[in-house]
Image 1 (cartoon, rainbow, N blue to C red):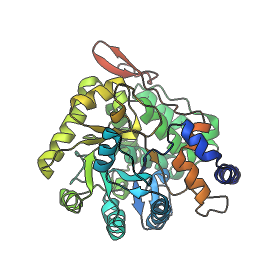
Image 2: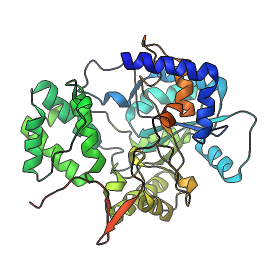
Image 3: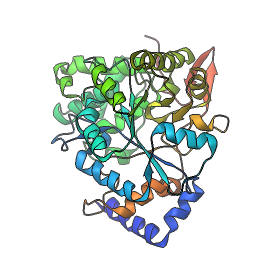
Length: 382
């Protein structure tokens, strides 16, 4: 709560003084197009953290508040329009904004899609092609829900989870103590720590081991579902952009180069075959990229790719277009109400710049032909 009050006070000072816009210009966003990202859109927030990752949720009502705020200040454009403007350098009298939704969740179709159509707002959905039309769930959702069940329901401690990781030959990650002050923070902090560095195959081993230990296979039915191909076709037919978000949502900076190529090439090929159109847009899972992943995305034939930070690859600026990802609490003041001042600072990236910019690594190590992220956890031989 104190943090929200401090954030709200800072936002109002930045907003009314105009400093936020000035800081945004230092971050490279002066009069530039705004690209926003969202994930799960729900009718109401769930009563428990054991059904969804809280920091990925936004209610339809809050999303509408965001869209209405943007509509008063920006001209909504599609990603194709945005790309044309970035390529040609053409200017418009009104600032531009594009709205995107990651992961291809079914709740986009149920809640966001009708809202966007009613308001006439073009948008883009980045889909994980290997999950579309299947009952399989996103691996990050499975990992988080498994850990949430372990910590919140089973009464387990961090040491219990560490022992499970040890049996799998995975060195337990170090998590800052401030992220573990509350029990609800443990599953999310550990989810982030594991996803940040482990290859997807190792993450899957952790998930399957914990699901088996806790007998949670059936509880995964509560995890968010993916779109069907029929829904994807309808979204595309309505004029929305359907774009690639890899085949399995692997964090590409943690994978070998060939796996990276497979992820970006196969997802594009599948979408083009299904939709009968050229797929030009790609979003990096979790916004993570380095020179190897960017090169793979270029080799796969994409024209535009989107991140979640302000860092740009100067050799491929159109393949490292910044986005700001928002959720339910991103723009709330200390009273839990939507704040225009905070929304302005979020859009201008003032908070990001003041926090010191991007903390992610955008360089990679290449050893024996394998693409490995710097600082990854040690995995011992089994």
